Amino acid sequence: MAEVRRRRLVGGSFEVCRGLALALVFVVVAVEPAFAASVRIEKPRRISLASPFSGPCAQGDPNFTPGVAVETSVAVDPRDARRILVSWIQDGHASDLVMASRDGGGSFARIFVPGLSACTGGSPQIVSDPGVAFSADGRVAYFSGAPFNVLSENPFTPAVGMAASRSFDGGFSWSTPLMVQPVTNDFWDKPELSVDPRRPRVAYYAFDKRLAPGYTSGHSLLSTTTNRGRTWSAPQKLYDPHTSDSWPGTSTILVNRDGSLLDIFVLSSQGGVGPSRIMAIRSVNGGHTWGEPIAIGRSSGLVNDPVSQNILETNTALPSQTVAPNGDVYVAWTKPGERNASSKIAIARSSDEGRHWSRGSLAVRGQTALPAIAVAGDGTVGLLHYVIAPKSHAGNWPARLALATSRDRARRWSRRHVAGAFNLLTADGENYRGCCFVGDYIGLATMPHGFAGAFSMAKPIARNAIDVYFMRATTSRRGG
Image (cartoon, rainbow, N blue to C red; front, side, top):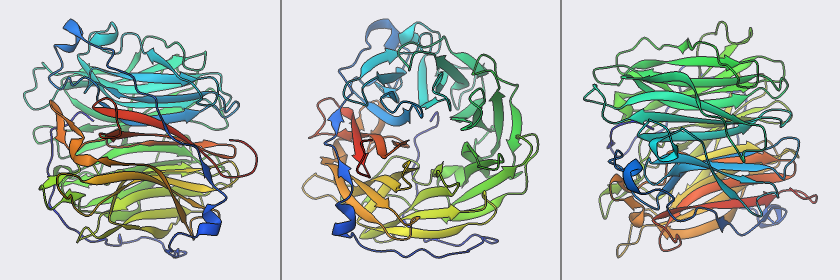
């Protein structure tokens, strides 16, 4: 995300948004061993390689840090689960890249998007916020990212644009990016590209604009393609809160089973350091007009180490969202605890296309961050997330990955260890964000009988500065 390094105040408790409809309260439970035994997690494999960039192309990037790989996105072809894509930011901001697989993640090829950044033959100096997706019929794969120039006329922020590229061979080659929003001396932020699950030619590209001089207010925008990404419509305003201290971030378009659209976003306040509201708006006419915002929940606070005085340098309130095969909509986000000893992942569910929401939470011993939610083809709900120790000891702040699963629509959960622990204090990119950063999001994608996920870990597990690892989980007897 193209934004200044930020610090947030410790603390903050969960508050129910006014107007929040509560049709059902989920039950928070501990791990159930018998239930968890039905989920098989393959040992994660490191898929990031040594730094591919050096020389003149990296000189324009003040954040250039070889070997740093963060902010993962994962996509699985809905017609052929052997085709998998993973993307992330490489070497600070030198470029986003894509890893493509034809064998279900058994092997990956590293692919560059031509012309995306100076290091891949383009003019933008650096790139951020990668995302990948497959169309409903698997014929086209999409990539989205935010290229920008750090030497802009704007003294406060880089000049940013919104890029989209497409592939017709499963992600093994990509078109030169089409600029959905050309690079200007404006703060365009957090692209989110999503596909229509029933109309293979249709995809949606949402992003936001943060306004000068403080960049603590703004609005979101939406562009649509109806020809598999060959062209995109002129961006139109999606949601404007009309406030001086908040903006709708990480807007993501979901398509309900009745064809209506649902935009899930976080309404950040106080420059991103204040309480955040998780919101939704609906459209019943293809995005031409949108209804009034619906409150889903709130989040505040941060993940911190009281010993070293470091914080997890990320936006802990960014929601993750998905539509289940039965049409249920799920949204997950973090609720850091006040005393570091325990925190929660909030989970909201809607069974009526986002009109009303019920909520629950998954208790986490210690601290937690960056939940990614998905629903497998067999209906199993999955939550991939970091579990972080309450504090460091002797220079080690342990962090690991866990996968929580539910077979009863997020009422009861089981949790399985995935990977780690690594030392979060070593997740320091020198020129890139400092300690402690593993990205603003991680990826979890639906498979017919399981999940595919990707995430970052630092030393002592990582071989490079910060590496990306790929995992698969099988949730039923048939293979993923």
